[in-house]
Length: 456
Image (cartoon, rainbow, N blue to C red):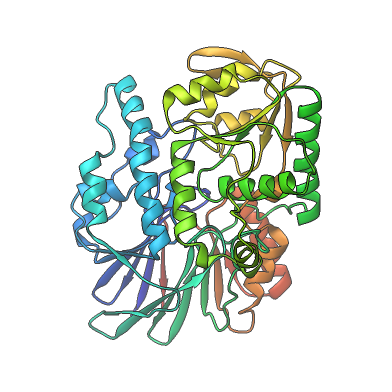
């Protein structure tokens, strides 16, 4: 008789929409409940009915606070979920900011399409009332009727508060990675390696390629900065408000203090990015030892001469009146909404300017079109020429690359009975699956959305 059943409700052969249903004994739990991300939030996939009854779910375990992992939680609550939501404290704080911030875009899209928004503010607030904080390695025990389920978070090193969910049940040890961090990170601690796993459900966003090393990516950033500054241009960075923005501030802080770049205005034009940076400061004790040493010297790693934060709309609009050269960091990271669209519309046609892509760009997003060398893109109903330089630096991704994913899966190579490769585009997942099977010899599968797997 099956003792462990997994339904791939989302995040299978897709890097977004993370949502996995696990049934153990008389308990039903979810790992993540995220939005699919593309050129808009109101994708058909986000409107589909849940493949389970929300009111039947006992608990939800959140790996981290990116929108593609938490973005459908308010809808889950709206449709009847009343169980407990678990995550680390930073994940809870950032998730609340992310979900509330997304409502602006959701509302505008719903109005344009004359439909009802996926959720409202009251649904976000209702979700937060169900939330419980847990620490890394704090054990949560649920009684499944036929035995205890013990769940524990390991540090994934992806963003602040991110965790790998490890489940012990019926003598089996199972892990859901969420997203795995690009170790070593300038801010985060290294990903914790896990031994003794029986089954592994692992991400594969960069399963088919490797990143530049640390020194190379910093040099590419410096080169892009200097080239744009010398051309008296504008450097635009569509940055994810969580982690990427804070890492960039850290790099700029270092380069400005060391005199490696001239002092020019650096605008952080993202209300969400500004608020998340405050959360990062709140939990600065969770950073790695290198950052802790810098902080003990009295240096504020998120503040430097030239940095201007522009929380209001009027302050954002005033950026256009500031003479170039200048640097603009704005959301969203995939250019599928947010203030970056205003800047791209204004500055992309000028060849003296640069747009620097520093993270994964989902299929269908404006950012993906720019990376794929589109000569024109549609922004707010108007065609905009892309004549600015396009610099794509994979090394700033917060995800592990192919070689390091293989290394992570090797920690339990002696005990693994099977690996399921999830959270990646099909070609990335398939490539990683083949590498893992060839390297370690254990069975590897790339499941499809909606597929159900039973573990005896």
